[in-house]
Length: 176
Length: 224
Image 1 (spheres, each protein chain N blue to C red):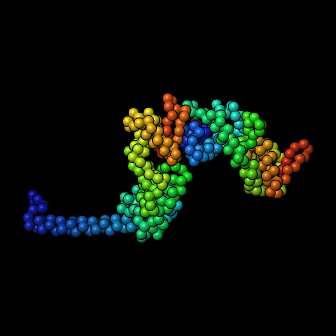
Image 2 (image 1 turned 90 degrees about the vertical axis):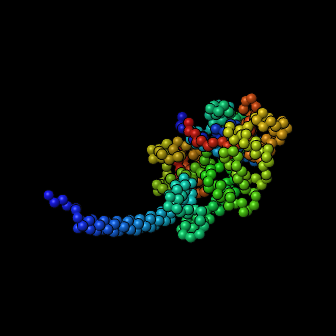
Image 3 (image 1 turned 60 degrees about the horizontal axis):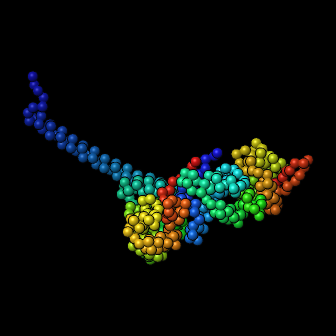
């Protein structure tokens, strides 16, 4: 497991108790949201299983013997959904969700500026090349999961900066 | 055998030599003073160049600023305190503490939970007093609290904070036993702290609820 940078709040016991003061709670939830995003970014994970997450270090700080209750976890995740960083894969049961520590638009921008920096505009490359190819090694989107990559590219497509295409059964993309 | 250094002639010679030494001595001393003056002048020039080159660092990096201030203090210059003259023009730092003052308002509003750069803050907040009573520094035991709430802390609240400052938190029992308060009084003071956003509840504490104060919580970055 990679080293995680924890914010100071993670060591602060009341951080794990939902706060009654509205203003305080607002700050608390914000801090939790950014912790969830930075944690998943550092872990390079793209999904959360709510039940499992209860025991993950993210919501359970064993060192200070504090953990976030299921209710609070759901509150935090719901907040992330509102900001466009999370989607439930099962809208009704809310057991599984996809986390996007960068929104598809942000990923799109990142990929596009990489393409521009390598003058790869007007060339076609496969999706596999983009995220698994040698050339993209060291970039943040190396290893990006396919569903998120597709969304990132679609957001570029809607800005007319890219066009998704299919050839010989494999997916490719052309950047403008 | 004729020993040298005896008789009138020798004495006169010695006097003369001494006078020469003396002359030479003061000449050297003068030299040294003027050299030193030159060096100080040079140093000042360099310090000025340095200040200009690192203006942004001085303004933005608190550690850098402390070191720079120490360096200046060693030659008797306080660039950040004076709002007149060279330093103010050179760095635009005359307004430094006023700028911080304004930023403090922002910081206090945005993060009522953490504060750093104590000396800067204390100076800046003192400047802010001219604006009214919205911002005050309350000495609590060994440390200071910056009050940005336009309210007043009563004696009870200050005592409560004193009680909390060592552990970073306080419980109702602490107040009952430590301050000999009635349950009611303790409850009211604690509720006030929560209502003002000064205290956070920890309901997972045993054996009873703890009221934590982020301002007393030592910051430690943790990697694991």
